[in-house]
Length: 44
Image (cartoon, rainbow, N blue to C red; front, side, top):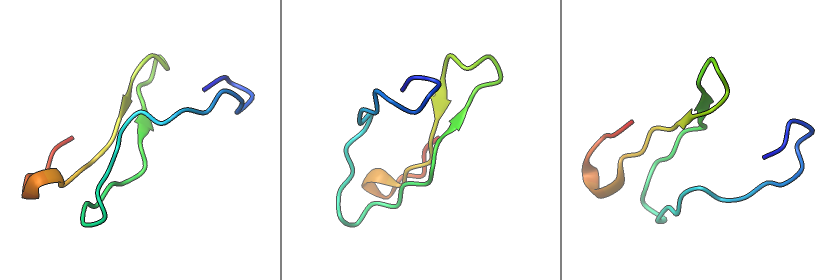
C-alpha cells in the first residue's frame, strides 16, 4: 500500500471460521503484524 492509500493488496487469506484482527505497522514502516487463530493456534 502506498502512503496515499492506493495500491491496496491482500497479504493473507483467511477462512470463514478464522478470527483475524487488523494489522499494525512496525515503527519504521517496513513490516506489518497481525493476529490470527488459524488452525486453532493463536499466532502473531
